[in-house]
Image 1 (tube, rainbow, N blue to C red):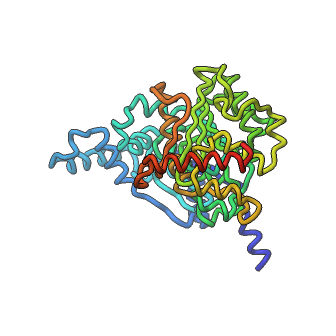
Image 2: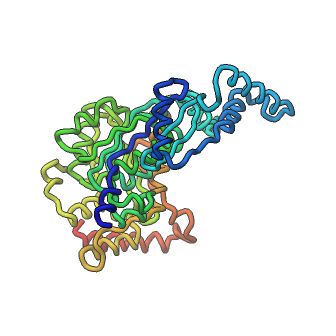
Image 3: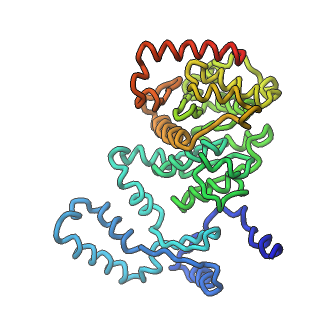
Length: 391
């Protein structure tokens, strides 16, 4: 039993799907072999429905006419004159799922997948967003960021960096099932991206960001997203963002809320790192911080006045009643949506806040949040917290 279980755990490093064009004899033979050998356990083929959607997207004025079904049948027939529907488009094999999926070719696939984005995102914006190269360092909140970007049809080229594996305590905020426990976060996230878009190009850095590989990580990037916990490496990211004149986005959760920082080194390479909120910092100084020092510095960056009451109480309990600072899944999703929005704006050169934005569900949904009494109460609490926390 033990030997069987160990053997079945293999394959945790696979994250890229295989694509087969059955109109090509050699690829058709390879695909047939996978089927015969039982490597493919499940097949998903709603290809006719995909063609129906594609025909509608290409002919929107025909969709609500009574003749649509007839014209679509003619379209299908025109395809079948040349080849079988089975050999039209491509088949995507996901080894980690033992599943093959029949999908449209790249251009048609992207058009149908993003059809419902129109015109909230117009074609020119969608193309720029899709054809960009985005680097995401840190895949806790970064997982939500990556999936929000991919969900909206952005970032065909993605670089992912994180050295950690998915742990059970991560699953309260990383959108991944327990079948992924023990897998590298870069592998988990890459698989999720490919499951949404098999034509993506995902490059993984399973060793995380280091002084040795950071140059390679930045090659060809149009945007960098920082979701790391390591403050020293955050400093390195900013050094390279400044050097390469690339915008940097970062989001941090704060209870149920989000703190989004936008650092436009593409427009103002001379700007201070972290907007100067951490004061004068160095790589070596940040590198020497322990868990408590990191928590203190992050609090300083966010601002004690912005930290929620429960978060402040939790930070003071680290190492006493709790292991680390708390994080929530809802906040990770909120951050993911916010950063994906900012990424699209930056890549399309649209107007965007150049400093910080506080996205507070508490402010919008808790009654009397902005009353004089509550504002004064939070102000006193923040001052007291600064003293206790040594800020």
